[in-house]
Length: 556
Image 1: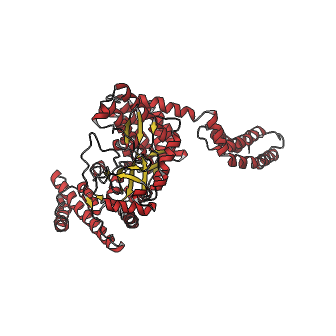
Image 2 (image 1 turned 120 degrees about the vertical axis):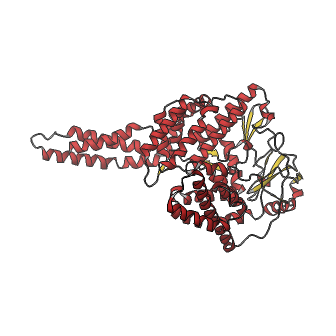
Image 3 (image 1 turned 180 degrees about the horizontal axis):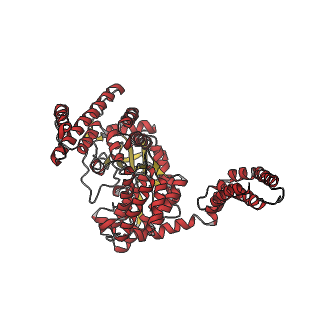
């Protein structure tokens, strides 16, 4: 949702949302099923038309398909029956309302699974939705916070700054004189989301039986998880404060201050950041030095979120970034965040590090390691394809020619071809990288994302090996280390038993095999301790472990 709709933005005109009684679960089920069946019929007819136009449709089977398409076409809504399938999908999602519009917006990111022509059309889904009336907004605020509006604000702009699928925002001034933004969940939206979530899980299960290649059950489960969290504004307040704490040492990266006394589950009051969207003429007219600082700071911020903190803004676009006075960067609309678990975060750190340093083979290997293999997966083929894409980018790495963001998108898109699927967090990470490269190019035409990234990613990469980081990991994994030490006597006992067996087997030379046994015992202990730390850079621990197995086999 756009936080500042001034220079360069369209006038703030919103259709008023008339809140009707929500449909019951059964009625909503049949409404959704009607659109699903209509989409199936319309999509089938569209595919037959496409085959006929291209000249691919021939023979008796195609004749039967044409007759079937002619039978079902009259049952498809006349407004879209002649449209291609992606357009029919987008229009039906819009007719089904806010939940499905949000679903389509999330699906538009899944270029690793869905065809490009489908995701491209879903990017055109409505992003300026009807707003609730001001009286309804006041009612929600007073009910959630338990106080009249006049006891909290001296002024609230009745015309919203923006209205999206879940909430809308208004300018306001608190009794203390603070300029704030008031974000409110629209009436009936949470109930609608919870009801539709139940239906979507059922449809996801059904679609999984029909089109398992696209993994619809997992995509819908991810959507439900993220959307229900986004509708809880207490979580957004928590996110803003977490980001502010993570960036305490970077004062030029700003997150809005949260006014907890005026915030609840349905209402969020936060600091108003007075800045410009980076895609407006005001931002692009800033002095060169300030634009350079903004581009570098934005890159440093996003790389840090992704590869250092593992906690990042998952809905990044130019409307959620602000160029603030003094060359500072502001991040807003923090309801949707991504979290990378330590293992995935480190894998993607190594992937990005290899990528910007031109190591195509290593980059391909790390991206393959981050994927989940489906039935019939071809990881070797995927790795070769990704390595070739990376080499192609290295030969012509420019924003206009072949950008880094395009490279990552192309690599991720290849996943479905080779039955390699990625967690949604990785897809959201790609969106963040696409945004920062696009914004950098807007502010600085010719922006070299690889060169800028190299500086920041190296700093984070080196920090992974610093003494402070090692001590931190040691403390975090202390229980596993203690457990490994407790098992050390057992490991030594097993080693001695192997030695005894070796002596009995070779009575003429009882020392035969002792060297291998001692090496095995030492390697087992060392390998157990180092593996207990869970640190991927302790490669020697893994090597010791396998060396121990070989030594035991030879020694015994």
